[in-house]
Length: 119
Length: 119
Image 1 (cartoon, each protein chain N blue to C red):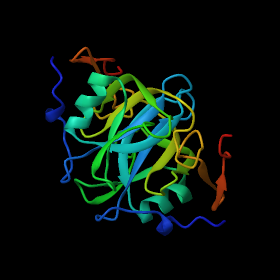
Image 2 (image 1 turned 45 degrees about the vertical axis):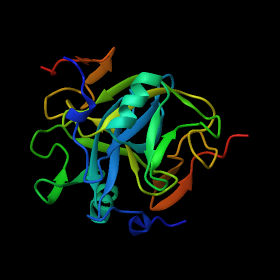
Image 3 (image 1 turned 120 degrees about the horizontal axis):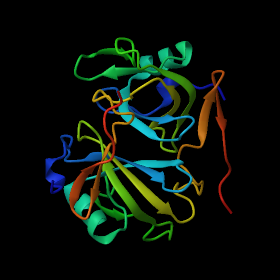
Image 4 (image 1 turned 60 degrees about the vertical axis):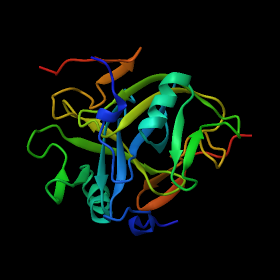
C-alpha cells in the first residue's frame, strides 16, 4: 500500500510525536514533532527533519550542531498517531551534549543523573 | 534531589507523552499519556498506569487483557516534557495483539507490515 503521510493522525497544531531510537544500540534518544511535510522531507532526504514548535520552522536535526540523524527506518503505530524513526546518530542527540535526552531516572523517589555530557 | 511529578511539563490537557520500551529487548512498544497522578500511581504500584484520553480514566495497562507492564525504570528527558518507561511486558503491548504498536514501516514509499499478531 502506498504510504501517504497525510493519512496519519495529527494533533490540532498539525503535528505528530516522533520517537528517535538508535538503530544499533536501540537506545531511545529523544522525542520531537513532525508535520506532514517534515515526514516527506525526512523520507526524501534521509535526514531526520522535525518541526520546531519554538521556532515554528523545519529543523533538520544536527544541521547546525553536526549531530545529525540519518534515517534507517520510519515506522508508525497502530493508531497512526505516533512515529518511530530508527536512526544513525552522530554524537549527542541531546542539546545538553548527552547521548540521549532521557538521562535522568527516578529511583526510590529521587531523581538521579544516569550519564554525563559527552566530551 | 527528590522527584516531584508536578515539576514536569504537561500539555494543556495536563498530560505528558510516555514511551514504553521493553527493558530486555529494548524494542519500543507503544506511546501513551500520563497525568501527574498516573505517574505517582505507576511509581507507587510498579504497574504502568496511563491516562486514557478516550475514556478519561486511569488505565492500568493490561488490567483487562492481562498484557501488563511491570515498571523497571522511569526516566524523563532534558525538557521534562516526555517520559520513558522501561518495562517487563507480558504478551502483546498492542491492542492488535502484536508485540509492539510500531508494526508498520515505510519502505520505498510503500507501507509494509513487519509482524503478525501473536497467537
